[in-house]
Amino acid sequence: MSIVAIISLCLTAGLFIISFIFKVAGKLRLTIPIVCLLLFGTVLNKWAGEHETLAYTILFSLLGLTVLSWIVSLVKAIRCKRNEKHFEDDVAWQIRRAREMGVPLDEVQFNEQGDLLDPRTGVPIVYGEDVQFKDI
Image (cartoon, rainbow, N blue to C red):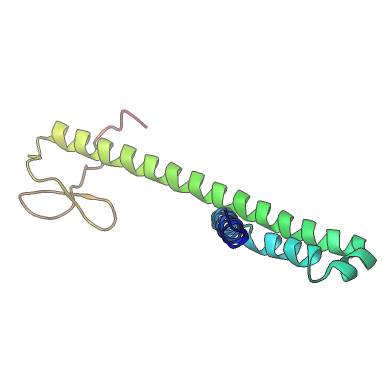
């Protein structure tokens, strides 16, 4: 193999690895810390060596903010799943109560507030004040 082919192959593999690293970093929100690490290791190497404590503080602060953003995203996802579960339970309860009241459920529809609509009239079903709530 010629030297040009080997260099081309190594350059292609290197660019592929860097591309893969940045795609993974983008998904994990680590792009800025990785760019900072690359800058400290190459372009700002002399500065990072002279101000090692500051360089590490900057890098670890960026990593801490990234971890904090992961935690915020996890909390939001848990809340969203919890809200979906409550909504599903509410829908199931409304359908069960409507079935007990004798409302035909051939065309089930809900309005924007999540109220079950009576298919005969198109208005939300009022369960009444004298209806006993067994499941609550």
